[in-house]
Image 1 (tube, rainbow, N blue to C red):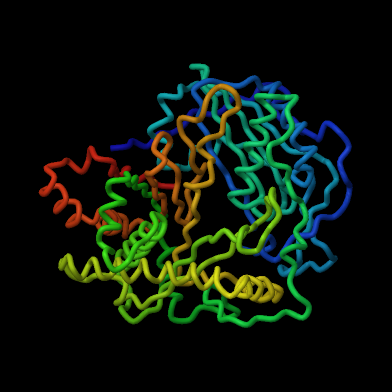
Image 2: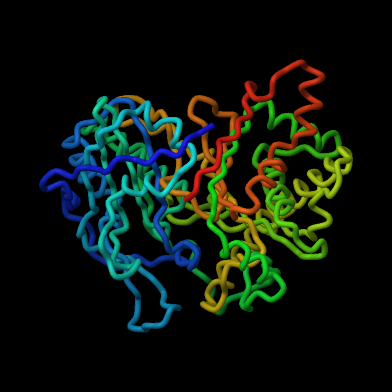
Length: 470
């Protein structure tokens, strides 16, 4: 059982907050953001948490950050509206002015051993590991904010907040690895040169929307509003489940021989149906699964493109077709098969049609009344195949990598030391925690497998971290 760990306060020495500017002159201009960058549901910072066994010289980190910001100069700029319109539908752009990133230095009276296990499920006190920039609005926060916290054991915590309007997960990983590369080898040239232009994903004039796009809506939710009320009426509880490669294989076996699938496809379907099964919804309600799909290859984006190069795939189903309401194992398998097939169809729809589906989505987002349909949807973001856990500033790879905080989105996280494992982190309303845990553990499948192989599931890669309030 994981215990709630209230972190001690961070101590900030004098002059702990530094503005790091590029060490050489950088272009001064406005950077256009594509409609994929400028979506309202991306107007937040991606916050990563890293735990390292050994700290890195703060001066080396500052020097390399100043150097890498020459190449990634938009991250040293500031977001702004591209017109004087004060409504909520303004288009954003980046003022590439070289003002710099924020780097905070701190000390915490704790050890890496104290933090490593409890970090698997975030809680509110962990937010103190990221320096809070006092700002009146989202636009006033610098695109890049960092905090380096040294521990009494010689370990180091690195927290990064990178504006999602400028970078997606692949882009943030690319930037962090570039920073690490220059920290280890200050005189080297970057392995990947960043590509800044976003016009390659500019909408057409006039827009041409030729496909239905179920992940988006221009209307307010109707029948789904009760689900929204449920999600907002209770404290959210972070739940975390680690699936080893053996357990992923057992899920896949439930879909063969008629259907072969990837780890993401089966884990997405299993998590989706577990979430829906925990909500006790009307069986005729249509529910959706939204998940990120990388479009760099399908759209021939230039190497080094670090902007938002993904779109949302959308699988949708009636509750009764997705959720098993009895203990019949065969019926349970059929529902998993159905969910996997829907995920595969959503991916195929996005990638087919010579990019026309993606172009239609970009054009559709030109209408600022369009919103991501979150009314009856689970959103999954894949962090487990981005190389984030391989970050090395010269003193070794992290002992832990994950989000700083937990929110309503579901994250598929890497498991340090096991490339084939997946950690699922999602926050759910307090009343559905136990039901969600029951569905995620797929008890019948594990028990059947254990009886055949005389194995103890709890020691074979499947682990459920206890709930902690966030």
